[in-house]
Amino acid sequence: MQRRILAAATGLVALLTTGAATTAQATPSPHATAAAAIGQTGPYLYLGWGSPPKATDVMSATGTRQFTMAFMLSDGGCTPKWDGSRALTGGTDQSTINAIRAAGGDVTVSFGGWSGNKLGEKCSSASALAAAYQKVIDAYRLKAIDIDIEASEFENATVRQRVIDALKTVKQKNSGIKVYVTFGTTTTGPDANGTDLVKRGARAGLDVDGWAVMPFDFGQGSVDMAAATKSAVDGLKNTVASAYGLSSDAAYRKVGFSSMNGKTDVAGETVTLANFNSMISYAKSHHLARVSFWSLNRDRKCGSGTDADACSGINQGTYDFTKALAGYTG
Image (cartoon, rainbow, N blue to C red; front, side, top):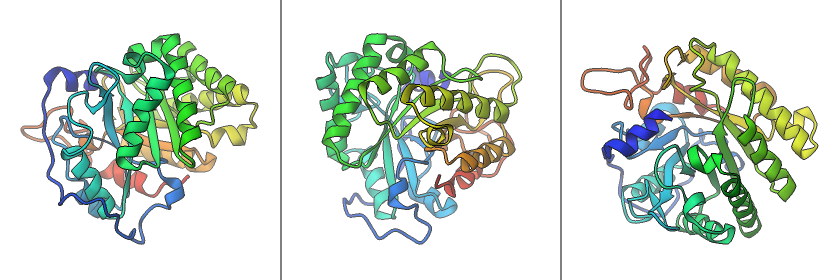
């Protein structure tokens, strides 16, 4: 996505201030999402740019208890670092995660994104890639991970297979962990690369908890984004059903989507709050495995001194999309 490219290109770092770091996890509030649902929801929170909000303030304002922390990348080799440059532990990313957990929430860490060095490419084998994933899982005692496979990592068949094989190892070594795989899409479902990825997963016997598409940046001009999202997820459902030999209902429960709130990177595309609410209703009717959006940083209207990475570009209340998503439990 172009805005993810901008993040790497500008190198703007707007670190948010969180509460004191602690590894203790408080008793969840009555509004907390059931532990079994970890990873199902949670907007992407990116600490590299876009004036990221304080996560615990968002929790208080919206009732959300889940966040998808982005992005875990390669340091140029097979070592995972936040954005490829910030230390895995001991920095603002860790203190943010600690604060979320202390307030009764939890996180899914997302590997990849559009820009930067990808672990799937820089790690030379599936075993090395699995070890890199495991290092992050162990560092944060993660219950869920998201593999946001894009750009050259997505386009290379050898790398797609490496990711699949590494995730199978992760599943074998971490009982109960949720694994989500997120990738781009056409308006009618996965393209050839996405279809191949799902088929490789099925052939390997990889039990992905949720295959999710990113239904935006279609490049087709004016698009009904709610309708396009539903059509894209229907196509993904068909792909997963065929590859894994599942019924339509069972396949819906193994798929999902990650939208983009407000104006996307492409002219003619705008996800309104009404669009997003329609998408969530659709998700509820089919019990989709995962619903998210890019990004929490943008979940507010634009104002003086802000840029496209810090606001949605539409008239909205602060955190309206996060509030809409907070009640989704599948």
